[in-house]
Amino acid sequence: MKLIDGKKIANQIKEEIAQEVKQIVESGGRAPHLAAVIVGHDGASETYVGHKEKACAQVGFKSTVLRFEETITEEEMLAQVNKLNNDPGVDGFILQLPLPKHISEQKVIEAIDPRKDVDGFHPINLGRMVIGLPAYISATPAGIMELIKRYEIETSGKDVVVVGRSNIVGKPMTILLGQKAYPGNATVTMAHSRTKNLKDLLLKADIVIAALGVAEFLTADMVKEGATVIDVGITRVKSDTTKSGWKLLGDVKFDEVAEKTDYITPVPGGVGPMTIVSLMQNTLKAAKGEIYSE
Ligand code: BQF
Image (cartoon, rainbow, N blue to C red; front, top):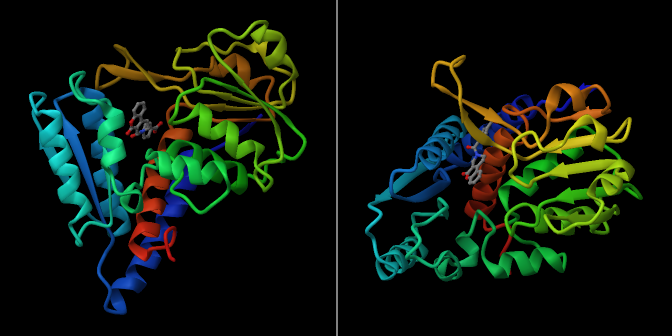
């Protein structure tokens, strides 16, 4: 068993970004600027936005957090998005999801200027990714691709099962690993709650991406000997063994699955830190105008 150390790789990449930002600033440029919009007071969302602010500080980016009460209307949200679109001082911005039920996430996402959509949630970025054009790729799939690269995990001709079909993780991951590139050239199956014989499918997989959001779903009896397992789950459960009173559980029963795997990501410290660092990479690209350069 080899541990895929997302925290370590994320720290290395942050160092690399910090170096580049230093050079930009030393040669008279301004620091990249990421803005985040958060609505309401959801504990997990607060934590995630905190992680993003901290990472911005570590790499030398400017960051701004715009906070709104749950009572904000869809119209007001759209006006905020418009303001950020037109603010030349903001390179990229994100909407921390979920938004309150009375606001259509799809509608607000579609109002984001694709050039500032560093989360890669806009249909233009998703569509461009699907056809292999330069695009902002959503941070979790981008982070997983980076881990596969940095650990030099073979994907060509491999059988991959992605469990979960969300627009943010499962769907893009399926496309990326099937792309004619490295990482890619895999034979990818997207499995979900209606999949028949999931266990049989999983037992044939060389690589499993667990992104269904069910704590400790994947057990040792579902994994082939020598497989690579990427755990995207992060369920917060109450705990009396931690200071915070919470602990994070992945979608994988780590201890028993790890005994069978070649490579495996832990939770915490696996995919999560890479999600944050991919957002930093996307923001740097936005500041440099790298994706939409024509
Ligand atoms: C770690 C997210 C579900 C829904 C919306 C580091 C994060 C998490 C874990 C983090 C996530 C998950 C984020 C660890 C951002 C990843 O050490 O294991 C960082 O901050 N994430 C988000 O912004 O929105 C989500 C998951």
